[in-house]
Amino acid sequence: MKESAQRSKSCNKIIKNKKMEKIKNKKLRKRESGFTLIEILVVIGLIALLAAVVIIAINPARQFAQGRNAQRVSNVNAILNAIGQNIADNKGVFTCGVSFSADKKFIKSGADEYDIRSCIVPTYISELPVDPTDGIACADSACGDGYDTKYTVVQDANGRVTVCAPNSLGENALGDDLDEICVTR
Image (cartoon, rainbow, N blue to C red; front, side, top):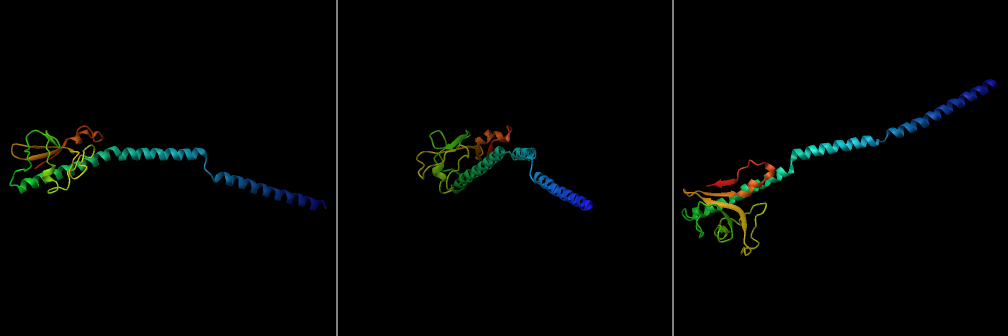
């Protein structure tokens, strides 16, 4: 009888030990299944660092400045093409009531500037393009409020016409060593 009592005690101990191991294992598994606060903070810090590196590499200010200058090149070419077509259609003479001089003047409405809109719109170009930063387009077809393209035009002694975009010099995001965007024909 003693033997059977000892056996039953040892069996109870084994069963208790197994139950205790199961409880310990469950607690360990629960602890292993989640992330600690330190781990989460490290991951967030790495993501922030990578985001900062990407933003610096992309440099959005520079991208926008390049986009504006690309628009300026397109606009200057469009204006110069319209002027060139007018000159070609009129046997080498720009017929607009204004003659270009060696002095740079802005293409805009006003007495002291080159008001050429009525000569080239809509025959040679649908509307005068304006500088992407601060040009003033015509609000209506009559252009009653005036316009200011912020582009300049000049004609040299040989009759070559140059249209420039002086605001391209102010694009600080691209550096200080920029040349003015000009196209000559």
